[in-house]
Image 1 (spheres, rainbow, N blue to C red):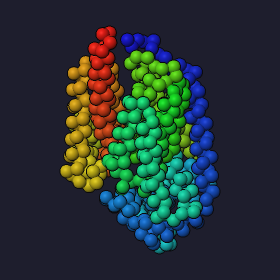
Image 2: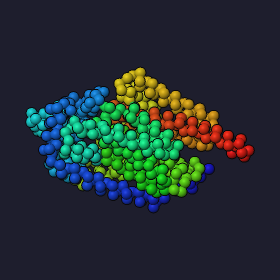
Image 3: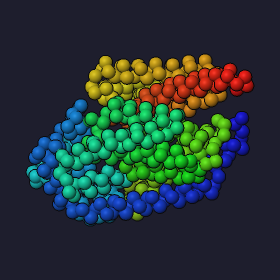
Image 4: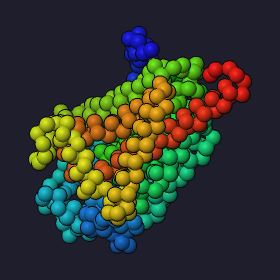
Length: 460
């Protein structure tokens, strides 16, 4: 039975203070990384960017749909290259890189090339300090561009994303049955339906995608050896902090959180000491999810504190203004917030779902339709089994998928207006198949128990 006291153990203050201290230490490390990356000469970055335009590995078109060579989001690629090439001073470049942009942000890449070729001056453009994010992708891009041209950087980023999924696949093979099923499905669906051909080669997506997968590689590998709840909290908080460092609000956080909840539930069985019963498994899973959230929130706040120290309190206004815009309701659809969330989710799938199916409308319908079939089959099997284990296995997968809807409820405008946000739908798609795989395992487990009972004459 899940009792009040069992839930209250989630909030043991000594564990949370230790976890928070780890996150603070990580943020100090992030600051050191950004400062180190900012020592790369801005002139070198400008030369690499101009070379990228001249060779065609960077386009003056802000968006290139379904382009598997240079990717979808040239706008963000040009933005990152600008951030690492505009400032010569290390601290401003680390905490609030300078960005120049044309009116209404139209023709951003073309304006950037004109700046590099000195056909435009900074006086002819608008500017702002981009202080809202850590921009860890800037550090990755700058480091790679020291020794590589931009075309090669794209190949490295794409290869890193696919290689991380291969590592996840191998680690999953060596895990227990439930974690193996989850890890294998995550790796396979990530490689096949996460839009990697159009996003992995981009500095704004590739480093973050790889960070998400490697985070689960670490959690899955350590779960096999057994983790205490305090160690698991520390790992999940570090995972959340790292994703905020790499995040460009491209959907990494909800995707990771959605998969993290069921992974924690399944990992609880190999915890030290092993979590007994569904209450202990939920407690373990939620402790990890809350720690992940703590790492996310604390890292975002610390970044703003660093930015305020460097540039003054006006950066807070920039942060809150954008946040207020992202969380407001769409200018269409139902007035009810919950219905708005469903409307936004369906609209995003209908408008951008083909991203997950290589531009094919038929493929997208088959992908989402088969996921619905998997969810339905998992639900029916859970009903047929009518056991506490099977019910909670289905519930934890459904709760993970619900995190995506909660994210959309909170941030509908940003989700609707950015096509790459549909990529987070990979979580409910994969979780449907994970739920089905876990239910099939439960069927086999119950059948084996019945056979053993028949052979031994002892009721199971």
